[in-house]
Image (cartoon, rainbow, N blue to C red; front, side, top):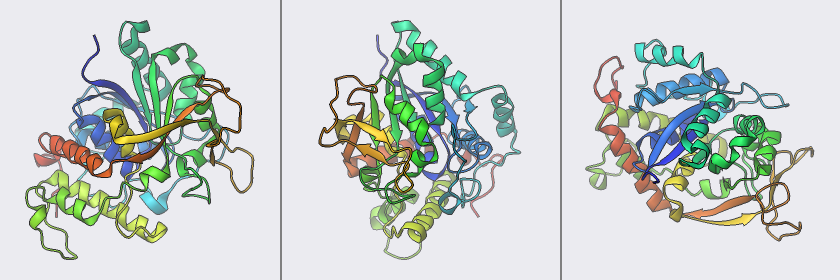
Length: 366
């Protein structure tokens, strides 16, 4: 019998929006988080591992949820990072997270030395799926797709145990790190093509959709002061946080808002790109989407990393999800108000148990 909670594995490169994705993965009631793997991307692989460990602990994740470090570089290309958006360590501006020297963080770090992303994903799928006697795993990627491509290549016998692969990445005629390339795909376009060619369902959540999920000033007021946000006077000063967790989230999202404003001209707030993957698993009814053939441009000087969506069915295709078929569901819209209700539900659940709110071993909000 299927559980009411969907088994999920999260592969990420935290990252401000990845941080919020981790929060939802831990605190949405219909999600069972099996584990977290980390990859190069927004910052170095060493930083993404440490960031994921700190965030899991701060969000009150069960102790058995480990972080499995993965690929430190793309399959064949030179690694890139995005300090302009996320700061040098990937979580620029954040206040209140436990330091790497915190005893709990040291414990999780010690365990992570013996763990690897590809093997962790394989074990979770094998044990959860149990050759058809159990449940299939929802595999989510919010960073470059290197770990996922390696898993698919090394463990093809486990593909039947994957329900779907959900990835934040790509764009339909739009990019954010070139005219047409989105950052996650551009970091490792060859890995993205391997994933797109896998003979299992994929769901792509592109920039066209994530750029509608804007964390506005009104939403920021509600995050900080959930019981009085409607009466908060309009001013340039944010209301005080009603808990240390909410203060930490506010500092994280404030930094993200400033970098998106200065880099991309987003004046209303930053887009919560990666969080939409968790929303899709939890509430697919919030999205509209269409099945297309999607490939990645690998060789062009000006368009490398572009996700080429065959909207007009120029290529003859079959019904498979692999190299000869319409291989991907492409999200086209999201119900933004309902998405943010899901976001606030997860924050509310986290606020009730976060160690940040106990005051032990954590810095003050000042």
